Length: 166
Image (tube, rainbow, N blue to C red; front, side, top):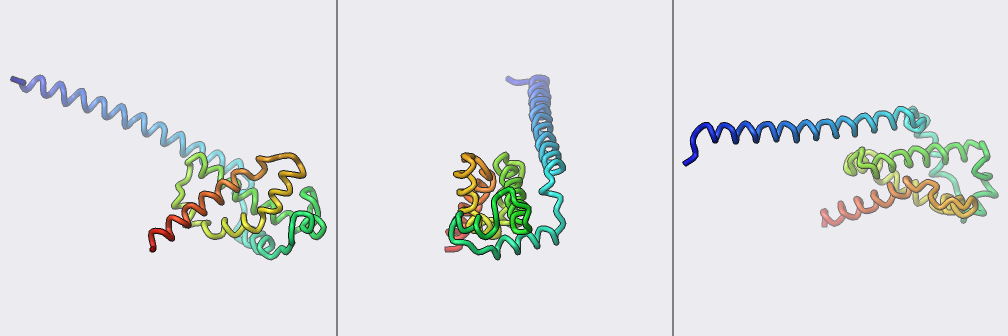
């Protein structure tokens, strides 16, 4: 038969084990918070004012082009410092940063959807021909990859939400 001393040793051992597991979990969580904080502070794209974001978003959503060549004829190359090109860089770099955070699981998909969901979809669909043209022209297949990842995740989320409504 089990005596009280054996039970108390088992309970104490279980408590120490649970405390160690909790401590390890807390250390990992704090590292995740620190990594997110450092990334956000170091990324200049995250230091936009609301007005800067809105101006860039408005400009991007109002560009008109048929394909990448038409885009280049109308707005210049990637290196051009026109207001339109700067707006594209602003939106693409910002969404790329959010995509990076999402891919690294430093932010939740539900938070990103609630904050940016449909807007990210619109931005990617508008800029996809430009991004694909840049990738081809500069032989850089990974340019704006986190932006594309973010778009794909937002599309999955959108489909999931539509299915849950049906």
